[in-house]
Length: 86
Image: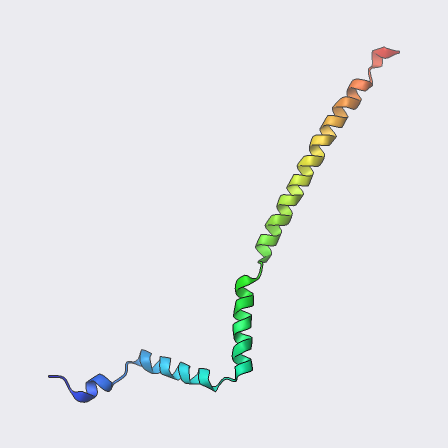
């Protein structure tokens, strides 16, 4: 048979969790609200990596667009300048 006080003994993890819980109660409401808002902002914020990828994709698209028209116009100009036309 087990002892009565054996079941009431807490593990170190339970003691640590209880201590952390007590510390949370000591915080004021504005502090808790600020912590929650900060966590939500961090979760929903757009990262620098995503912004950089979008800008890089736009830049590549614009460069491809420019190169396409540059090559088309330069080919047409070469055809118009026929040296045997004189």
